[in-house]
Image 1 (spheres, rainbow, N blue to C red):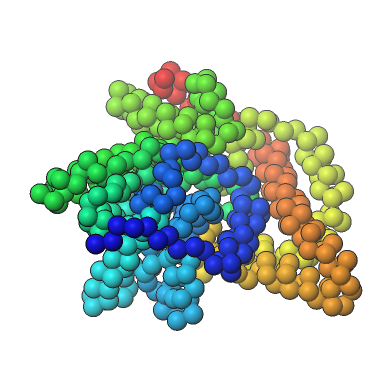
Image 2 (cartoon, rainbow, N blue to C red; image 1 turned 135 degrees about the vertical axis):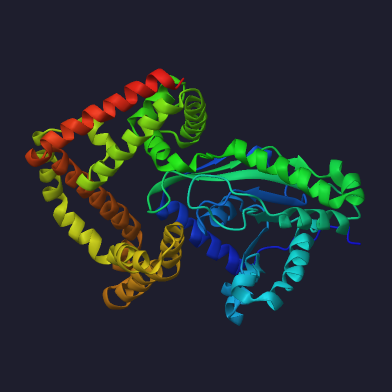
Length: 453
C-alpha cells in the first residue's frame, strides 16, 4: 500500500492557462469574488476532499480551482467531454476525471467509473485535493438536493490506500452567486470547518454502509449550514423575490448585516428564509395571502418591465431626462468601446441563450465561449493584426485598453437598461398601475414586518 505523497506539479503551460483564466474569470466575468474560510483548509499535501453544493455548472469548480492555486486540484466531470483524444489528454492534465452515466454513455460504460473512482482516491492518497458535488448534478434553484454516496466511497478508498494510517479530511463548502445568468455579478466561495474521517475508520471497516450513511448526513448538514437553502419550493420564487427586494435590504440592516456585502447578505438571507418558514408555520393563512400577493406583484412588475429598486428611489421625469443626457453624451465612447467587444455581448445574447435549454448552463457557456473563442479573437488576435499593420505601440495600447472597453460597454448597457426601467416607471400610461403596485408592495412589507422577526 502507498503511504508517501507524490503531488504532481503543474506544467508551465497549465500555469499559464490558469493565469489566463483568472484574468477572464476574476478580471472580466465577475465584478467581485469573495473567498471566506481559507483558514479552514488543511495544509497542501493533506489528503483532502472538498465537497460543495452545485449551483452553477462549470463556474462552481472553476472558481474554486482558480482560488486555490497553491494546490493540485482534481474534479470529476461528464464523460462526454472526454470523447476526443486531444480533449481527453488536456482535461486529464488539468485534473479532470470522467464520470460515465447510464442515460448518456450506456450500461457498459458505467463500469468504467470504477477506474475513475480509483484514480480519484489515488489523487487524494497522494496528498492532492479532490472536489466533488454529491448532488450529482447542478440545481436550478438555491436549494440543496440529496447526496449520492460516491464521494465518501472515494474518500474511504483513499484512506484504505493509506492503510488507514493517515487522516483523510473532508471540507464542506458552498458556492453562492448574486446572479447566475450574466456577467459582472458577484460570487462567494465559503469553506467550512474540516471533518476528520479518522474517527470513522473502525466503524467503516465493521459496517461500511451504515458509516457512509452517517457521515453523509453530517457532511450534508454542514453544507446546509453554509449555503442559502430555500426548501419551500412551492413559494420559492416569492421568497427569492422578497429577499432581493428592499424588504430584504431592510431585514438585513435591522439584524446587523451590511446588505451590499455579499458574505453578510448571505447570512442575512439565510436568517430571513428561516424566519419566513417560522412565520408560515405559525401564521399559515396570512403567509399564504402574502405569497399570493407577492406572486401577483412580481408578475405585474415583469409585465411592465420594472425592478424593485425603482419603488425605493421613485425616480422622476427629471431623473429620466438626466439619464437620457448621460447616455447621449457617452454614446460616442460607447460606439468606440462596443465595436471591438461586440462579440462578447452578441454571442451570449443571441446564440447561447437560444441553444441552451437549461438556464443554469448559460453562465458557464458564456464564460467558456468568452475564454476559448471571443477574447482570443477580439483581444489577442486583433492585437497581433494591429501590430502587423500599425505597429507595436498601437497593438500594446489596444491590448491594454480592451478590458477597459469591455467594462465601459457593459456599464453603458446596464445604464441603458436602467433608463428603460425608469421610463416605464415614470410613463403616464403606467401611472395608475404603478401607484396600485406601490400600495400592494407597501402592504406586503408592512404585513411581513408584523409576522417575521
